[in-house]
Every structure is written in structure tokens, then in C-alpha cells.
Image (cartoon, rainbow, N blue to C red; front, side, top):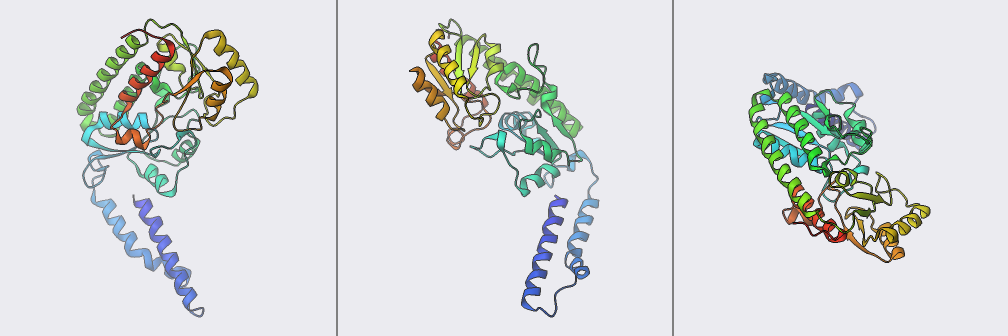
Length: 332
């Protein structure tokens, strides 16, 4: 916060200097004198900084809460649930935005630099975020390092671990530990919040497993290769038009290959996601003579989903329903 206020004070001083210079070419404010304009602000900030004891309880500001920045929706949702009222959690990715290509404005960079704790996913998922966190001095946790993805997946290559409720539980473990390290006095509360969230995840896992039982087909096609962990957990196979980046241009040869695979596998649906262009999915579906339907990678919620009260659990359940319909599943 101090860094932010100083930057703004200096900018305001420069603006006042320019205005006065424009009004009187004979008497611009000399550069050394500009510091006199911001000196009271700097002194006040220094006094404020020295007033606290520097403990974790004061880290979040006047209300004593931790200021936590999460860089993508699933992390923000889990962090808010685990921390409860002991932290203020900010999601850097705006509602309806595609997080892979998020760019940070100066205020967001300031929020990230000034936060008591930053939680993010590395592996090139959000390059602008990874660049910005290099300038942080405070606690910064790459949660992808806390997840054991298992055999057959190179760590850090696919960030969409939250689509597997079991791996999402690993993220919750990492979030709990990071919060406890930042505010040790509140560790028991964080442990209780994490336990509640893990119980919800276990129930979700059971529900999805039951919903995706007794399926006629086990192959599904997506526009964006985000569902590999979900497919592996429930015995399915994902075929995707693009790889990890949803903005990648579709390869005509890949589209032709998938059209053949769709026919051979009896696939009925090509899934697209709401936050990116559905054009490639629609093109493939038209070529193959099948339907399209949305499937959320849960990288963010749309404004409509937020207004409807959706969250991680409701969207995951809706995904399971759409997959079950497309795959001809007769489970519960």
C-alpha cells in the first residue's frame, strides 16, 4: 500500500508541476522543489509504517485481516472458504475474462506487490502474473508445486488440476499451509476451514463418479485440452482441438483427424467453453455431424454464473451432467 501511495503522490506532484509550468513559462517548479510537494505525504506514510508492530495480525490493514491475492477463480474460491473472515481474498482475473491471457493493469500490479500473501499457479499458465511476482518481497506460493499429479503427467505441464476433486484437495492443503505460515495465530481456524472444504470435495467426487458410471461411450471431444485430469480420474479419454492454450489456432489436419475419431468412437458432442470463441468447436461439429454443448474448465465464472450464485461445486456438477448426457451414462 505504501508503494502505491508514494507512486501516486509522485505522479500528482509531477502533474501539478507540469500544469504550473504550462501556465507560466518563466517560473516552472525546479525538480528539487517537487519533493517538497510530496514530503508531507512521505512523512505521514513513514509514521504509519512505524506505528504497527509488523505482526501477521496487522498485515491485512485496519481490520487486521490478511490481504490475499489469488490469480485464478478456483484458488480464490478455495482460499476464501479456508480463510473465512480472517482474510480478504482478491481474484486478479476479472469475471468473464480468459485467465491464460490476463494482463495486469497498474492497480492490479500494486495489489499483487502489496498483498500479505499471493497464491498462483506457475508452469506458464499466466505469464503476466509470473513476471509480476518476481518483484515481490512477501510470501508468494506457486500452488502447482504442491500438487502430486501422479504418473504419466510431467509436473507443471497442465495447470488445470482443480478439475480433479482429488487434486483440488491437494491445492486446498497448499492454501491452508500458506495461510498458516502467513498468520500462525489463525492456523486452527484455517485447518477447520480446509477440513470443511475437503469434505465437500469428497462428496463431489462421489457424486461425479456415480453420475459417470455405466456409460455407453468413454471418449469426449473438447475445444481446449483442459480436462485431462478429470478424464483420468473417471476413466474417460479427452480429445481436444487445441492444447493447453484455448486461443491456439486450430490445425486443419487436427480437425480432420478428430472428425474421423468422432465417427469411429460414436461421439455425439463437441464441447466448447463459454469464455472463448466457440468457432473451432462449431466447425468440427458441423463437419462431423454432431452437436455442441458448453463444458466449463472453471478458469473463471461469467457474470451470469455469479448472479445465479454458482460456485466451484455447482459448475463441476453441471459439467458431470453434460458429460453424462453426451456419453450415454446411466449412473446416479
